[in-house]
Amino acid sequence: MNLLYTVDNNFVPQLAANICSVVSNHSGIQDITFHVFSNGITEDNQRLLQEMVTEYNQNLVFYDISNFKDALGFDFDTSGWNEIVLARLLMAHFLPNEIERVIYLDGDTIVLGDIALLWNQDLKGCVVGMVPEPTVGPSRLNDLDLNGCLYHNAGVLLVDLKQWRSTCCEDQLLDYCERRSGRLFANDQDALNAVLKDKICSLSPAFNYSNIFDYYPFIFLNSLMPGFSDENSFNTARSKPIVVHYLGEERPWRRGNTHRFNNEYHFYLSETFWKDAKDEDGWGAYFLAWRTFNFLTRPFPQLRYKVISGLIPAFLKYRASQRNK
Image (cartoon, rainbow, N blue to C red; front, side):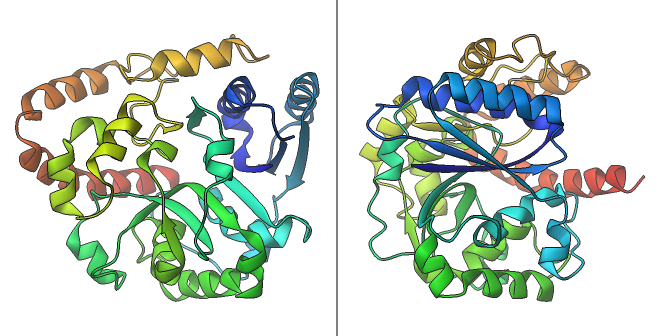
C-alpha cells in the first residue's frame, strides 16, 4: 500500500501524527510505504521520521521536490495558497513507474479507521477517487464548466497512477493551470475537478471528513449539491469517519480551537518524537468569534453559508497580501 504526502518542514509534527494514526488503525494485512514529497524537511527531521516508521516495521521514502517549480515549467499565481499544493499534480513525475496506485493525504489529516478500506475502493474505471465538497457555489461550478457535475475536495485522493500516466493527466492538468493562472480559486483542486470531471469516482464522506459536515445538516448540503452522498452513508461517516481533514482555520495545533477531533490529533502526536511541539498562539480572539458565529448561525444554515461564502475570498486576498510582504 502506498501513501503520499507533500509537506515542508513546518508540517513535520502533523505528518508524524498522521503516520502514527495510520499505523495505529491499520489492519496490518498489507505493508505500507509512506512516500513524502519533501520541500525543505531538515535532515534531523527526516532521520527521526525514518526511525519512527522503521519502529512500525513499515517503509518511508523521501523525495526532494525543492525544484518542483522547474518541473511545472511555468510561473503560477496561487492566490494566497501555499505553492506546495501544486506538487501533488506531479506525483507521476516524482514517483517510480512501478507504483500503480497511491493514496494521497494532505498533511492536515488524521486517520481514525483502517486506511485499507480506502485503498481497496473500486474506482469503477475512473482515474481518481475523491470525496464531494457540496458547499462549492454555483458561480464557481460555472467557471469550471461543471454544471451538472459534482465538485470534489483534493485533500484525499485515491489515484490509479497507471491510468493517470497512460491518459497524460499530468500534462492536461498543468496545461489547464498555466492557462488559468491566478484565476482558479483552489488552484490544483479546481484543475482536478475541471480536467478530470468525467474520470472522478465519488467516495463516501467518511474518507475525507471535514467540519462542513458538522456545521450543516444533510438536507441542506444535499440541496446545494444533490447526490453528493446518500443520507445513510453521510450519517455513518459522521459517526465514524475514516479520514478527518482539518479543513479551514480551526485546526487542533492552534491554541483555543474546539475542533470535534482535537483530542485525536493530540493523542497521536503524543506518540511521536514531536509530542512536545507547541500549539500556535494568537488564535484566542479568532476562535472566540468563531464559536459565537457558529452558535448564532446554527439554526440558520442558509445565512451561515452566505456569510462564509462571502468571507473566504476576502480572507484569501488578505493571506496573499501577507505572503507577498
